Amino acid sequence: MEVRIQAIHFEVADKLVAFINKKIEKLTRRYPSVASADITLKVVKPETAMNKEAIVKLNVPQLDDIVANKTADSFEEAIDLCLEALDRQLEKHKDK
Image 1: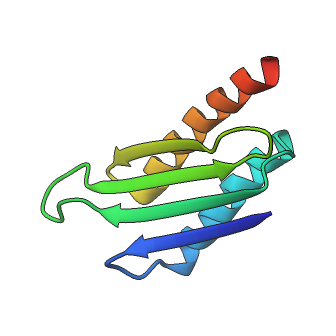
Image 2 (image 1 turned 120 degrees about the vertical axis):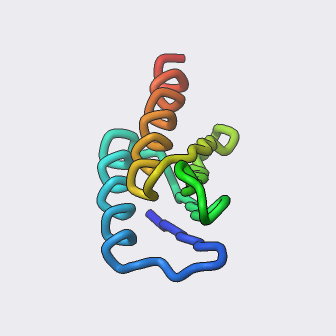
C-alpha cells in the first residue's frame, strides 16, 4: 500500500513518519481493500494549544474516498483520532 505524507510549512521527523506508517499498517491489516493513504499535516496557529491538524484520506476501490480531519495538541494524537474515525467509517461500509 502506498502512503503519502505531506507536511505544510515544516519538516516531518523520521519518528513521526514511522509512527504514521505503523498506524496505517494496522488499519490496512484489518481492511485489506484500502489501496492508498494521503496524509496532510499542518500547524494551524503556532502560538495556541490544539494547533496540530491531520487530514487522512483513504483511497478504497469501489467506494468514494474516505476522509477524516482532526486537530489536537500533537500530530500523534491527531493521527490516532483520524484513524479511529476512519475505522468507524470503514466498519459501516463493511457491514453493508
